[in-house]
Image 1 (cartoon, one colour):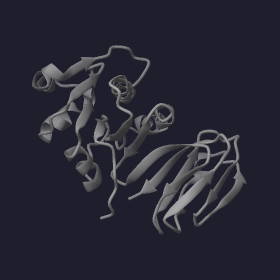
Image 2: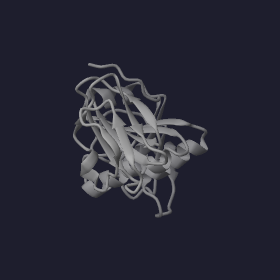
Image 3: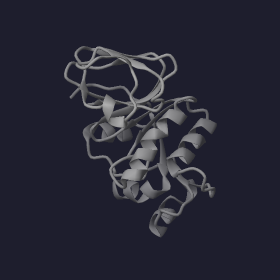
Length: 209
């Protein structure tokens, strides 16, 4: 298995609890575990002790409330989802490097929302979301990312009116407008890095394990 380095400050969202060895290792070695309230029962089931359990507390069982009573942080407002509440709490604590697990795998609208929010968080902190299949991260402007030959790469532009060029991939692009989400998907790395070139473009990048 390839070696990856991730933050020791982890948010566990209320998607499907991880089953892949990499996100499970992220949880096992975490220094800080910020649990979205809907994931509290999964943590209890797996014998994992969170640092805090945060959210509007509408998705947590009475058993988990009792188990983690001293660690509950209730944020009632409904303008943000629990993942964002967890990120904002972490930022308020001075944490500048976060990894999110468990953000995907259940309702697809939640999955898309959780992934797209990375672009909001990434303007304030270093953040990525790790799934059972790979890593999502936000990218701003021209950026070089590590890869390996044969790695699956997908790029989703959140600024489809801004041209993007891709280098170091099987299907390079030059000043392309990614007007639909599918256009930048299902590419493949051909070396140990690839480059996204754009003056002010914002993307979400997926790299498979």
